[in-house]
Image (cartoon, rainbow, N blue to C red):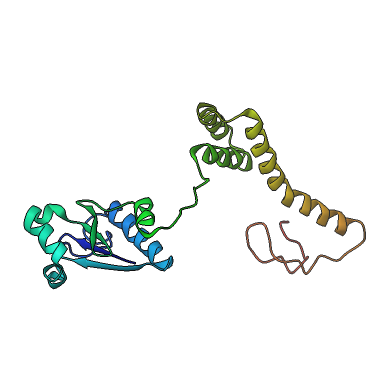
Length: 198
């Protein structure tokens, strides 16, 4: 299978040149890269830079003769027109290539659960209230929010437990700490008395 894209005249197809970024072109370039990684043969031509490719393709030449540049961008799948006048979405490209897309799991509801966890991790009351309300609007259950909070708290407490265990280990038996690494501001420890933070 071969997918060919014939772009309207432009300086380049990346979408990142010029005075502003063209988000649609950036997205489409990423989608074509994804398609190539799936093993699909992809060719892309720019009317400004490769006019011979347009003139040499009968289907493209016919479309240009009928509709002019309004038919561009033009997407061909195995030589037949699949999309004209716009860039196909990733779903459409996958459909052309017979690739089954796995549904994404990062829904708006999941995003709010992640944000609730982040609010717990950062001790941000305003953030928690905001994302709690947004999650409720999306129909997220309190039980799911509670699970997100518990997971965030467990992750948050892990380093706290580790440092307490380290402190307990050092305080159970005498130990010389004069060679400890600098801390509390990143300065060198005072070599005269071996103190850090003092």
